[in-house]
Amino acid sequence: MLRDRDAIEKNYRDQLTALVDKDFDKLANLLTPGFTRTHINGQTRTKQEWMSQLEHGELVYHGFEFLDTKITIDGTTATVVGKVICDATLYGEHRSWPLQIRQTFLKSGRQWLASRSVINLW
Image (cartoon, rainbow, N blue to C red; front, side, top):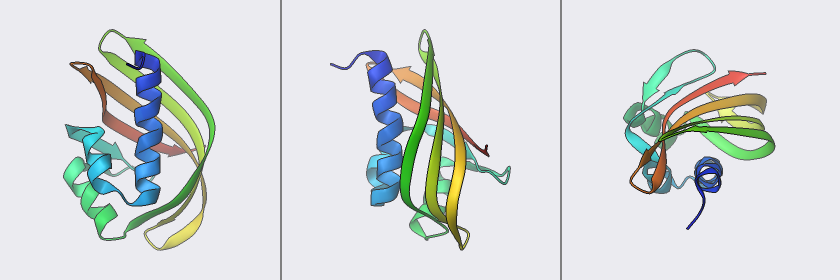
C-alpha cells in the first residue's frame, strides 16, 4: 500500500493524466462528490459542471510538464501545490499555460480524494 504522501501525489498526477487521456470516469473517481474547481478566470464550478465542460470539449488538455510539487499533510487533510506547464485549448484558445494548481485532499478510509482545486497563472 502506498504511503499517504505517495498516494496523494499519485492521485494528483493521475488526475492530470486522465485529463489528457479524456478518461473522465477515472478522473471522477479521484475526486470527492462535493469537489469544486476554480478556473484561472476565477469561476468556480462543481464537479458535475466541470466534468460537463470537459465532456463537451470546452476545456481540452493535451499535455502537462511537471515542474514542482509540494505536499503538506495535516491528519486527514492534505494540500498539494504544483506548478506545471499545461498544453491546452481552453475555451478555444490553444497555448501553453504556466499553471499553479492548489488542491485540497481529504482522506476517506484509506483513500485520498481531491475535494477542491484552485488554478492560477504564475
